[in-house]
Image (tube, rainbow, N blue to C red; front, side, top):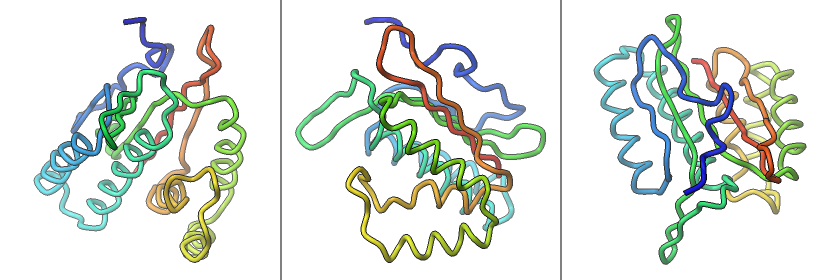
Length: 184
């Protein structure tokens, strides 16, 4: 197998004070469910606030679902109706705050749309995000969306700091690495 372009530069494993979960590999609905159970148990044992537990679990699920739905990595595996996509996710505590990060490969034509959406979210107040979230629930999903198109709004609604993101062109490829970081 060729070397993995997803691990170039700062996209290698994050360094947290405490690591709750770190996974790199193929994502399927079954392993997302298993990872979700690990996260749920970890949070039940280490986080007293039910609001924080809900936000962290929701953030984790949105990030891994985005990998499963939108990763453009050519290593995708398919069995019947079950598609597996390659990516990376981590959840931990750094400097007293929870951090959830994901990384996957995307097509060049997706960068502009993602960047515009993420930049817009960074300029919105929490109330504006909540109103947009509610309005989006009542609208039809765009043609490019494989879900209800509320994933990034859900993330932005739950974070305590603006979402951080980077795109990095992969050498000798038409793909770019998309790295997303949420702090709660």
